[in-house]
Amino acid sequence: MTRKHKTTKPAAAKDPGTVLVPEQPGKTRERILADMAAAGRLANAHVMATFAKPAMGELSIGECMNALRDTSQAINGGDLSGAEAMLAAQAASLNAIFAETARRAAANMGEYLGATETYLRLALKAQAQCRATLETLAEIKNPPTVFARQANIAHGPQQVNNGVPAPAAPRADETDSMQTELLGASDGERLDTGKTNTGGRGNPALETVGTINRADDRRG
Image (cartoon, rainbow, N blue to C red; front, side, top):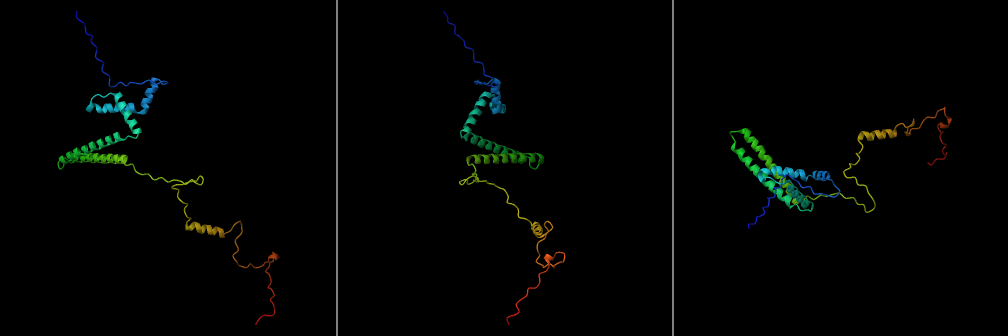
């Protein structure tokens, strides 16, 4: 008697474009998808899978999302080794682009000036991007020191005005104008100039005081 061997069907290949949506209590499927879109990982995972397809083949969008999640968690925890490695690789790639475009510019030198100029521009752009990438990497490794102004509040609250310009000194013409106003008329009156006014008959109280009699005996 022969026994029949059970044949198992091969598991269906998982669609790389399928994303498993985990259930969350109290949230609908639409809200979970909206949260995933707002976080940005879903869209960036799709972009990463699309642009990596020529070099790496079909990538699962779900696995790309998991990779982006792990990278974000590492950065939030203070681990920047992944970002540093990525920047170092990008700097090397940009340097390779610079070398190739510079070589092509040299190959067209003297015969095709238009192509030479185009390749030189591309080479210099790649060189500038390489330098900027290395500067960013250096800032991550050695962050710049920031000196901040602090207010001394040991004796109660104080108001600190950083960068407020001091009031400007009055100009010469403004000073002369102020002095003229102080010495000028104010409500129909003027300051005494020191001259003796001649008494008038219209107001006897203001007549000139007579000469005071002095002593007859004078010292010789």
